[in-house]
Length: 280
Length: 303
Image (cartoon, rainbow over all chains, first blue to last red; front, side, top):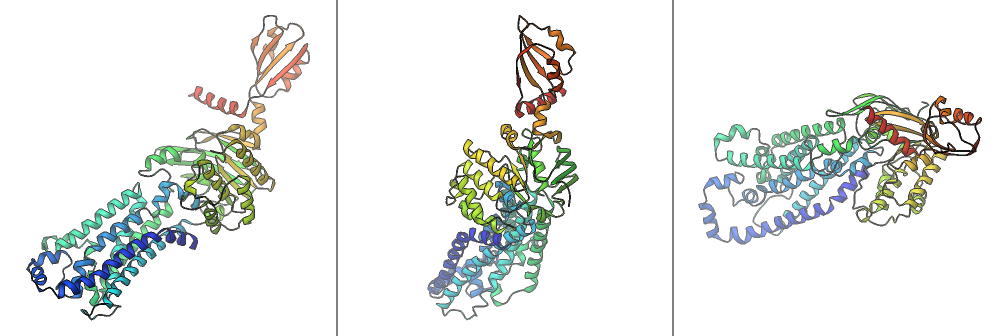
């Protein structure tokens, strides 16, 4: 239903602008910083070069932090999945469940709209919001790149890491959405998905240093995230894996929402509230 | 096409171990105003939510306007206007924008000027943000959204909650007008006097099962009435011992004045009085509230 989609997208307007402009400004500045410090200050290069390789491996396995891929990995794409991921899991955890907790979904679902329409409209709006944040961010990168002569890549190749970033965010977003269908509150869903996001980040980062973690790392979605390395080309296998995992979580969330009772109650844990209010 | 606007047969609903609806049977006729009574936790809201597929019954059959809401929820909801009892609205809308939003989700719709007219009758300022409205004004917005669709059935869960007496009266007028258009009205309320004013029939639900369903007037008539009789001369109180369903509550010293309790129909009692020197007769009908309380008092005594 377009009305629900536009309503949700409009509600996300400030979030899109806030995150998008903030990250775009950061992206723009990163290119200026590179020109001013990394290339002109030889001492800085020596200092950075003195760090153990493990430090750089932890932040994205960059071969060379002085090329564009390594630099953007270290300065942006290594940690942004955590920052945007927290926003994504929080938004996804509350996408449907918040309306149930607050009781506002009852009026909407009493209209002749299906649960499927509500689910997909809200999810589509969230995905478009995330896409717009990344597109605005890319815009900042493109502007910064236009002002530098240090690198020689196409604007289109700068899109690649954002596609990989979108894919990894989608995994945790869809996980949070699925968890919100089974856990007692949107907060709990966001918390658990956020914990798994951070755990996955650390497992994959540490696995680059400690080979004993390779076994666990196989189950970490973060290992399929390409970071800045995607500038030189997307690994489609990794992308397909991330999209497939997301599709499974989204399908589960959809089926669960379709089949279960709508929950009613105040914010927070609302199992208790169901017993109190739902019986009336 | 079914003859019933709503038909529930042996509906059971569990919340975990809590048995909220225990084989509920209920039939609502097209074009009537039906008052659904019961205290908190008796199953009123659960019943309504099952009828709109917001929650699903564990067993039993539900037909709303001839359709199963679990199988054809959109079709049912397109023909039902609903006001939730625990109404919560998104606060960042103005009332006008919220109603326009709901309008986008509804087909067929009532003409927008009709909605504006209802808003004026309820004295609602449509341009205020919902989060800044009082509970009563939020309730008005909730009522208006229930009237957005052009529907043959409306369900109200506590429609006059939080409204001042004048607006309550206006809401009851609007509900009557809807019934006169042929709309079936199903509503639950704690304000029994208002149910008595407008409901054609009432059902009383207790612990998830229907304990009584009747024409509102019949229910009141069938219940206990109080008669105060003045006789021109003294009358033996034993005279009333043989009358069925009559009990003497009080007699004054000279046997001229009696206070009696009469259960059920008054006809036999009035006939019996014809042989006595009656000077004055007052009959106090109980309010629906007293009838309702009697049901619950009886139930508690049984337990």
